[in-house]
Amino acid sequence: MRRILLTLFFLAPLLCLAQNEEANQEVRELTATVMNAQTDFPLESVHVINLNQVKGTITDQYGKFTIPAAVNDTLYFSYLGFKTQKVRVTNDMFRFADTKISLTELAYALEEVIVRPYQLTGYLEIDVKNLPINNAYQYSISGLPTSYEAGNKNPSAVTKVLGAILNPADLLRNLFGKKPRQMRKLRQIKEDDNIRDLLASKFDRETLMELLQLEKVDIEDILNNCNYSKSFIRTANDLQILDAISNCYEEYKVLNRKQ
Image 1 (cartoon, rainbow, N blue to C red):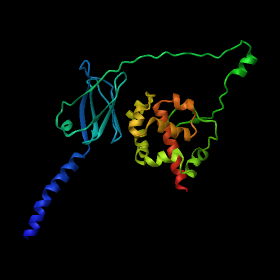
Image 2 (image 1 turned 30 degrees about the horizontal axis):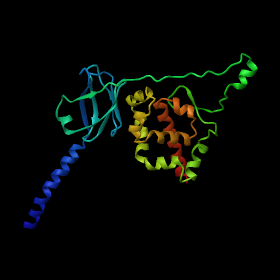
Image 3 (image 1 turned 90 degrees about the horizontal axis):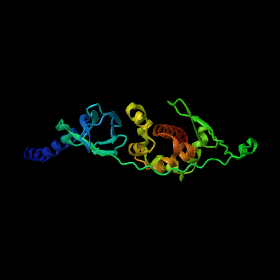
Image 4 (image 1 turned 180 degrees about the vertical axis):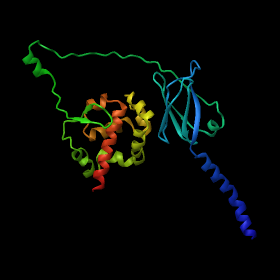
């Protein structure tokens, strides 16, 4: 009996510690306010994304937001004209109701743009021959009203990723294989309207990099291996890029299961 009591005595602190850690990981509603670091005024319509829970929201006219979160989750803040910021969720943020997060304004410098027009002669027969010809196929992305340009190879789903499956060293297979958890986030990201709205307005791939934990070069490699054209990769918004990666990944999974 004495031995049992001693065992319980030593185990009790460990059990309490485990319970506290479990409570800290509980997903709760977190409320905070986003401020302008320079003026201390609240910022309205700031996009807030919980990178761990894959949930998004925006701030109201008073800069306040509420989002599901757990301790140690990472919140990602994005607002036009301000530096993006990541904040780790702590116990104090739940304990105190006046948590404020400040964003810093960015200084933009416009770079010189040189426009090089086509050298036209005025003769239609000659000028038509000098203009570049685009032989790329057109694809459609689910949820978007317009089509997009893809590569000039065979557009079938099989040929787009068959090489990745047959060749173990292919970048596509390596990238998908190394980031299975991040790739599984694709469906969650596509189901959140606030995240989709943010991605539709961005072209820098920064938010996608944070959500999928991929480098920009990795995103470009995935699209290149799925035969998307350079013009699409360069000009598409982040939502179009997300849908393109998602389609490519789903096709890869289907073909990979057949091997």
